[in-house]
Image (cartoon, rainbow, N blue to C red; front, side, top):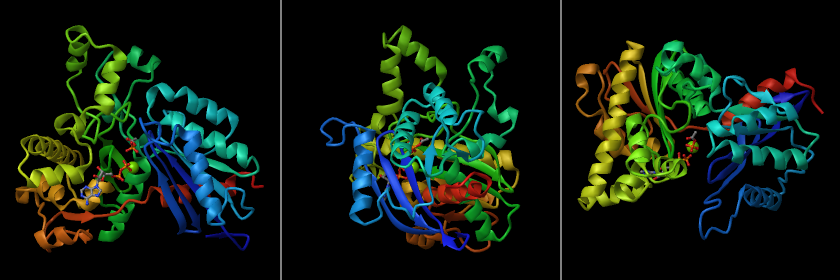
Length: 384
Ligand SMILES: Nc1ncnc2c1ncn2[C@@H]1O[C@H](COP(=O)(O)OP(=O)(O)O)[C@@H](O)[C@H]1O
Ligand SMILES: CC(=O)OP(=O)(O)O
Ligand SMILES: [Mg+2]
């Protein structure tokens, strides 16, 4: 990608709850990337996001690709919660950061880290355009029927309680790749983004119709440390009868639940090793994980009416043949099947030839998508 004959260089920062991922692109080519993990965890040498960003800046400088480089065109930031204010990539100003700050209560694990990244790079490079790309943006097209919780409407409006959805840059990128795979931009896709956080989406002709995360990134699928769907009555019971405080319940459902809560382990690789040794806790955890996922596949089949592609992505989706096989087992009557050999290879189409639904493994690339969206708004903004 060039503007005025110059190849664009974009630095992408993906600050998460406990990690910072970065990538430097020249056009669409990834020049360098890395990750700083375990921020703020006990015993970790990385105390907070500022410390993590220092490490990122150091790693880039070591490769002569420093944040101070005059060749840098822009910096793109992943921001998890954009509320209803932000449905497009947005040039960052003081007003924009103030609004992202206002949204912290809706994504307490994520937005503070995103803001820390923005503050550091704006201080270092006040001359550069910096763009926020929101996880929620791709899901802003879901209908009121899908976005509305069945609670008092006035209260919900006052407190901005509705379903927003997350991992939007991944769902956008992967659903577009899925459409390219079948050569039909108008097709219907179910995307299963299975990382540490996990979410599903139903996409028709590039428009998102449904997604499994809600007001916060806690609803939906079973995740590494998050419960996903839970009867809201459980939370009331924990407070009233279990004697737990709100903070304790928050920690329980966000950090001590999901796979970790069920079997003490949030890394799917280790869960699978324990499965092979017939560990009963790992067996239950794995079956709960795949059962929940299967329920969402069925639900989104009904939302879409016709499904052309089911796309697996994220660390688990891209690397676990066992999750893919177990989740979709026995769905031949719906036109869904997994070819064992293709599934083991785990690249591109993994369904047998001739089935109605193509099942595919499509690696996500949130950083490339953020680069594209960052560059897409630059011509409309004032450049240095
Ligand atoms: N070979 C593998 N088999 C099963 N799971 C894997 C494999 N490789 C990575 N994973 C899982 O991917 C998850 C991390 O996914 P990733 O998309 O990188 O997460 P995030 O971006 O949310 O931090 C971990 O739970 C890890 O166990
Ligand atoms: C929104 C969300 O859950 O993100 P992550 O998977 O990076 O935690
Ligand atoms: Mg991720």
